[in-house]
Each structure stands twice: as C-alpha cells, then as structure tokens.
Amino acid sequence: MFITQLIVWLLAVAINLVALGFAPDNYADTALTGLLYKILTTPWPYWSILIISAAGTALSIWFGDEMMDVTTHTQRIKHHQHGFKYRIVLTAGLGILAVLAYYHLLSDLGIALPAR
Image 1 (tube, rainbow, N blue to C red):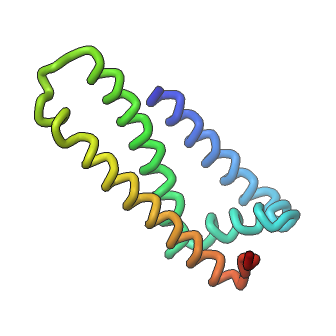
Image 2 (image 1 turned 60 degrees about the vertical axis):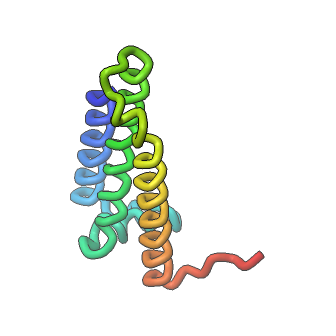
C-alpha cells in the first residue's frame, strides 16, 4: 500500500512539473486548475495544503496498516488503550488545518463561497 501511494504521488508531481514547464497556460482553462496552478506556484502558504495532503495520505496508510496489525496480535496493550483517542485528535487537527488552509487560499484569490 505504501509503494502504491508513493508511486501515485511521484507520478502526480512529475506530471505537474512537466505541465508547469511546457504548458503552464493549460492551468488557466478552468477555475479548479487555476487554483492548482496558484497552489503549485506559490510556496508560502499554499504548499502547506500539499504537505497536509501528503500527511493525510501517510496517516491513512499508517492507520490502515495498524488496523491490520491490531487484529493479529495482542502485545500492544498501551496502543489499544490510547490509540483511538490519538487517532481522533490527529484526524480532527489535520481536518481543521486543511479547512483553514483552503479558506485562506480562497480568500487570497478573491473567491467567495456561495451563501445558503
């Protein structure tokens, strides 16, 4: 699972580097690719969105592997006692951080979310 996600991330980075190098105008086609262009070309603070995404991918792999391990052995008593609380706090923190980063990105680009 780790190797698959690593290949996906490396492929995505390679495709975007080639696209940025040879055809950066293609990012202006839609609003979504325009946002991606802004994220890729503005290191601070927008690369934090990519870092949060990479951390989320790594945590999903780690938690998935942990869940497989937990079903097969019992020598991790401390993890069994506190693992769920740790996961909840970490997941909630990353979720809040991702939402704040996206709101910051949208406000800097002057994009207003529709009111309900």
